[in-house]
Length: 67
Image (tube, rainbow, N blue to C red):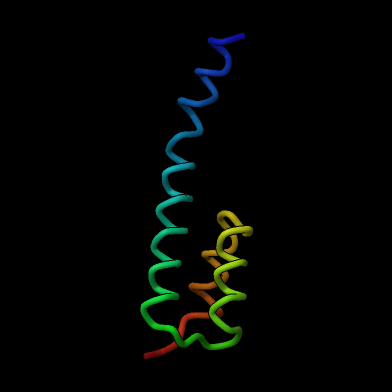
């Protein structure tokens, strides 16, 4: 059982690192710009945190201001 878990973690850790990195990058971007295109900052923070990988991608596509 433990070797199966270790094998799964070996495969999953790059995805986990990418997800966390993307979330951290977009959260920093939200707070630095403090001005988003469509929703307010609080809504984007919730979407980024709860949305796991899709939340940050949605922010980068739809929420990022041009400034």
